Image (cartoon, rainbow, N blue to C red; front, side, top):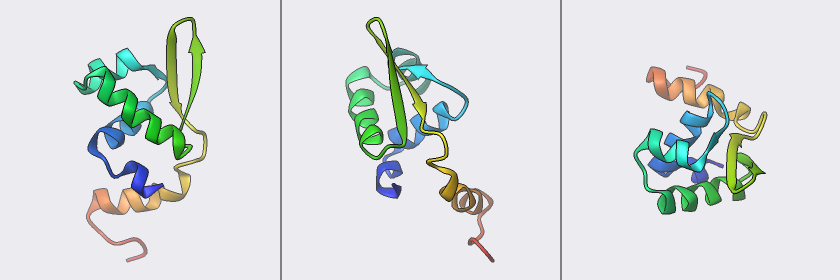
Length: 87
């Protein structure tokens, strides 16, 4: 899962999706990323089961898979705070 999050666009997409479901065009506008690159990176996140999708007409909506990132929350907090986990 860490490998799936290692790309800056994928990490930014996960961060954006943490506040709720978005379609590709919304994500692209929010992140300033062109649709082909974003779709490619979202495919990697889907393959790692980090995000799930739903289709409404021609739009595909992405959201974080519930509970999937829970094991990494402590690690992300430690990185953000600049300390090692458990230190």
